Image (cartoon, rainbow, N blue to C red):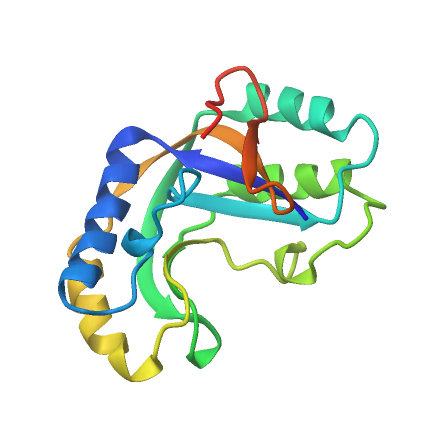
Length: 175
C-alpha cells in the first residue's frame, strides 16, 4: 500500500500533538502512544496498492505548485461510531481541487481505497485509532480546546510494506 499525505506546518502539528498528549494523559486511546518514527499528524488524501509509472513525479509537481495550503480544523468526531477519533477539517475549495487532482494522477492505479475517493473522502487528522464511542464527550472536551488554523506545507508517501516514507515535492521532508 502507498499513501499520499499532506503534512502540517509546525504550529498546527504542535496543536495536534498537544491534543494527542491530553488524550493519553486522561487514559484514553491516543496516537501519542505510537512511537514509530513516521508517526506524525497528516492528512491522507489517497491510498493505492502501488503508484502507476510516473505518478510520484507528477504528484511532486502538483504539490510543489499547490503548497502551502491553508487549513482550519473543525470538530472532533468518532468515525463510524467506534473508530477512529478524528479532528475534521473544513475543506476549502483549494483542498478539494488538490484532492481531485491527486486522484486524476492516480487514475487506474490498482487497489484504490474508496474511502479516500472524491465524494467519499472525509478530510481529517487522526487523534486515536480504535476509539470507544462512549468516550466521545470527554475526548471532545480534551482534544478540541480550540479550533486551530495552519497550513499543509509538505507532502509524503507512506509505504505500508516497508513502513517508510518518501517525500513528494521539493519542500517535503522524509518524515
